[in-house]
Amino acid sequence: MSGESRRLVAQTCKSVCVSALIVLAAVLVFALFIRLFSISSAVIMPVNQVIKLLSVAAGCILCLREKPVLCGAAAGAATAVVTYFLFSAVAGAISFGWGNVADFLFGAAAGAVGGAIGGIIRGR
Image (cartoon, rainbow, N blue to C red; front, side, top):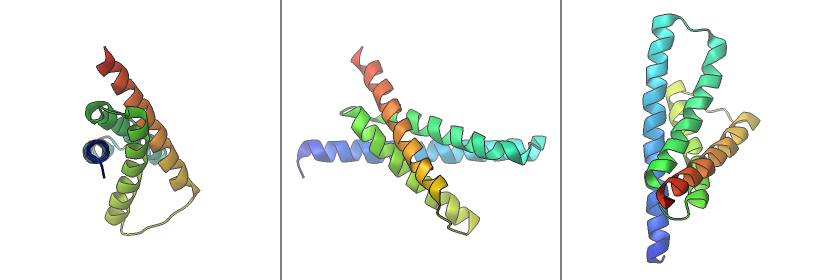
């Protein structure tokens, strides 16, 4: 593996870690709000999706320097996979369906957009 490839993989892995940590922290804060304010269960799934998408975009904006769109898409999909397994471990059950595939694709799209935004910001 060349030096550039290693750099890209390292940036992508760093972005996945940062994004996953942001997701975990934000979901914990949201769970606290649910507990304190008795928020309806109909709101939980959409808010969790928004949290994941914003966290992926933030991780890509903060961490990706080179080829941000490509690495962002990879980081977004990888973050969706990592958070899926983390939340499945917490729930104690793994169930896979088309919703998960959509979640992985939306994660990749959020990563690509976040990477593009990061590239634009750094280009100035």
